[in-house]
Image (cartoon, rainbow, N blue to C red):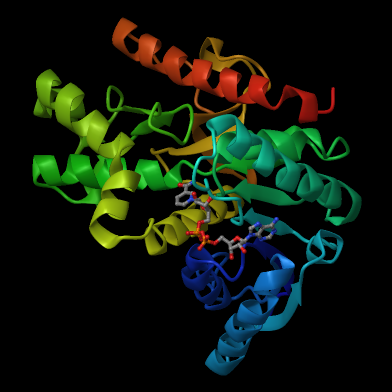
Length: 327
Ligand code: NAI
């Protein structure tokens, strides 16, 4: 058996974590031969509920679960950790403006970025799930100057997975047949689900669907899926978000499938003209525990406009928290 790795999850008493933690402990994150120590962070008022979650984890007697730490101290939660899934975030309260939401989260993610910088493994892989995920990832990254900025990522895998299923269902195929879909930009309603490079069962996706359906149905369905889940369930996506978080880290750590790619919010190096330094969702290939942006894709005018619109939103989010970002 391998030596255990440390996995930190924040917001560990929340609803996403209630799906996520049990699957991590079952081996769905890094494989059935990789023991894990869970380091669980919550705010002080949620520690009692977190204790209940830890009791249930104990009661599952997972063979791969080598230890559980519960804490309200980020310095403890991130100590020596190899993977961090930052799920906890401040939800929008009544009367809260977008800028207030960004600032409240900036305060949380700057503290966590500093704790990662000071205490985590130098090889840590960070995934931000809590919204606004891309900008929260940017804030954490900027507060961790001793860690390579490429190690901070944001989750758009749920959007990617949603896009796969919508395209598979429309074309009468399964998700296994759909390859090379892209989510560009922000994990928000401005995200751009791009099928121009996608194939379905080896055929060019754009030959199988018409532009009117793509523009009027597919794109808004993927962009608004989170709201549709809330309308149907009375609560936001939880099990699907947890599943996408597992997919994101597993692909990053263990590699993407041959002949395909995934979407990840990553540190922009200026590829496709996107401003360097933003956390922007690109198509990436993962190998040897690292990611690389897929290069050389042809971008038509329709796509360019949508990629820039979501870039602009990310620039505005960043500018709204500028005073909280270290230089
Ligand atoms: P939830 O409200 O059930 O749980 C969040 C938990 O975070 C709460 O237990 C809360 O006490 C905790 N928390 C708040 N501030 C914290 C801090 N400073 N440190 C540690 N824990 C803290 O929310 P849920 O449903 O689990 O969602 C979590 C986040 O994930 C939300 O921001 C949601 O918008 C986001 N999300 C992102 C998705 C994506 O695709 N990127 C998809 C679905 C949700």
